[in-house]
Amino acid sequence: MKLDFVTDGGIGSKATLGLIVLQTDETLEFELAKVLPKKGVALYHSRIPMCNEVNSDTLKQMQIDIPNSAALLPPALAFDVIGYGCTSGACLIGPEAVRDAVQQAHPEAKVTDPMSAIIAACEALGVKRLGFLTPYVAEVSAQMREKLEASGYSVVAFASFEETEDKVVAKISEDSILEAIESVAAQAPCDAVVVSCTSLRTTGLVEEAEDRIGKPVISSNLAMAWHMMTLANLPQTQEQFGKLHALIT
Image (tube, rainbow, N blue to C red; front, side, top):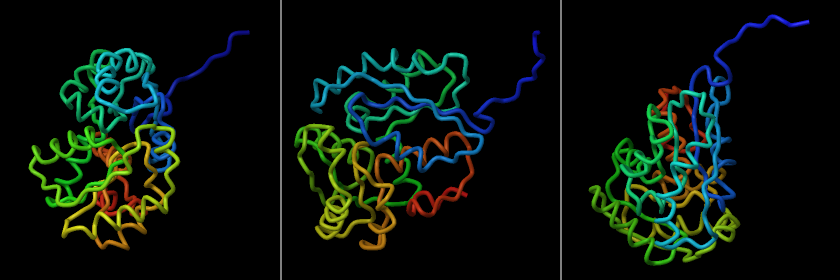
């Protein structure tokens, strides 16, 4: 017997979001699942090839691989926003090139990445003088500092864990990250501290970090979640995820 059925809007009745995650990333999916609203919002993931070591050559290769990874997201869906989840890769490749690569597979989707989201977050919060914390080697950190400064922001304090392996960065403890944020904030007067890298865990510590330093903490993951929600016109109040998410109402 053939059964009758009706269809509805599916899982993403309010928004359909896509996320391209590094093959080596152990953090981003977990953190965005905590932050993004659940009801009526569908989040689909695709992975992109990435060796464990982060350097200029491995980051450049991702520009070639982005269209194929984007194409592995469900083709029948009309994505509102697709996020490319690599802060350093987005900085090196450039946001326009990332957007163009993603839109080869999903031409109607809005596209963001952690670096674009961080810059949008800085603008929304009205901050200019930044403390900057990364896990990267000096070459990659320098490129990202240059990107922030070229976008009109002053990096007045800086520190890095200087770790090349993603599998190690994902296991840097929250206590270590908290102490690092405090250390950066203490170097020089700043308006906010930026914590770069999707592998660093920040959703569980952002409130305490902001209480300790008395200013916003803008992380790659929290900024991209906020930017994806903003681009998808998702009204939410997420004060437990820091001053940036308190802007969403």
